[in-house]
Image 1 (cartoon, protein in one colour):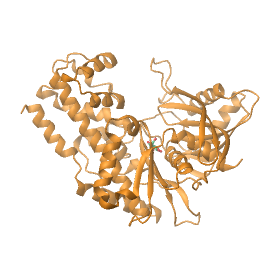
Image 2: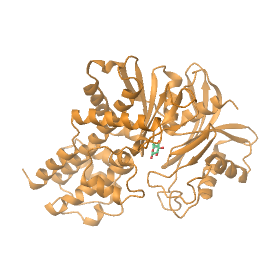
Image 3: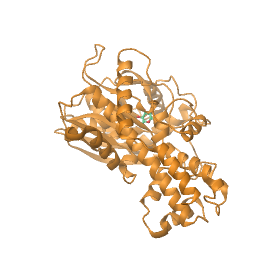
Image 4: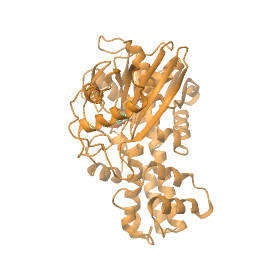
Length: 437
Ligand code: BGC
């Protein structure tokens, strides 16, 4: 066996999460949830949404603004009652121009610039002279005081837009809409994307009580039936990406140290789409002294971070002999040439390890939530998931399913899981309908 393959086998051992570790993570996850619910320090924020499950009978046409950190999506959604809806219009724009002409996620832009950009995109969808009710999905940890007011606690996903922490997000949006003369658009609800996904799934399916995002970020929300507070049953945004009691590696430590908020978001940094490419780069760079990628200019694989979740998906999906599809992909998308068949096989082996670990950690987090809400699994549950990683990464959803089956054994039929596409945006329309304004 080549030295490189030996090294990858060693890394594989560190990236493997055994069935025992899955149960251990699940238990620690449950414990951390319950610590926070009882007012003790915990990695979780357990943020209230001021929303319960929808009835499924919500009706009307609503504007949905979905802001997650990579793209801004605006949709006009018609809720038709009895669990059905239709997306009437859909527009999506990147927050960072691929050609480099703007970047609303950088430290050089301000909250005001960012919200003017969002308002301008909304204005392109809204017809002048017609009134609109808007629901806003804002996918960052935010402290909410009611269904329409929330302030950003801190950015995640390496976003750096200045002057946002502590600001009331709805005020920023309303101010930007007013500046552009878009007073016919009224924001009435603000939610996290995990809450949106859960709302959309619960709108259609009585069993849905967990909503999750596996995309650029990682996070999960659930229906807390018996909160310790007097608020009654409520959908709670765990901010589970901050979980840290995980079997992490030296690569995770390095990535964390170089990130915007070291020490925070350890589960997210180990598993979300924003960081998978970075992990792959770190591991490949470590193996370069053994001859990996020796024919490729080294700088191509180091800074700036060149690979993302889509690259990893392309590498993993490549079953061509000698992985020539990856050779073409790297040349076309990253101007990387000179890789050998062995290099590409090594990249695929590493990428598969990273992706598998991510899916298993996420599954363990779902098991932790299930242990909290229904330890005996006496009721059926549905976990609704949205996000690019779950939807597009080859094998990802199957690994989550297998991990759940492995842990739940003969009770696994009590838990179903599936994609709720556009859940984060459609949920904003449902929240707007519930807010009843
Ligand atoms: C944010 C969460 C969000 C998740 C998925 C994380 O970085 O903190 O609020 O739900 O990404 O978008």
